[in-house]
Length: 81
Image 1 (cartoon, helix red, strand yellow):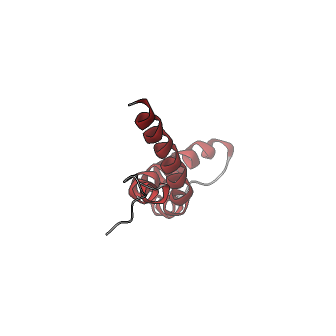
Image 2 (cartoon, one colour; image 1 turned 90 degrees about the horizontal axis):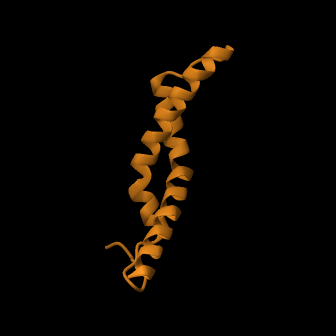
């Protein structure tokens, strides 16, 4: 069973785990398109597989930031009720 906090609130780490697939996918797509744009200044383009591996790595901090942001939104919404 997943351990929630005292008031049944989702902790940041759990929100980050739930948001990780979205964050990793968004990071991979953005990394791929970023390298496509850098091709204009002479840099090489990452392959889609390389971009996916980059998204897997970059997805961890991005998911943590998204989890903290979501926790703040949930706290704000609960305080207004």
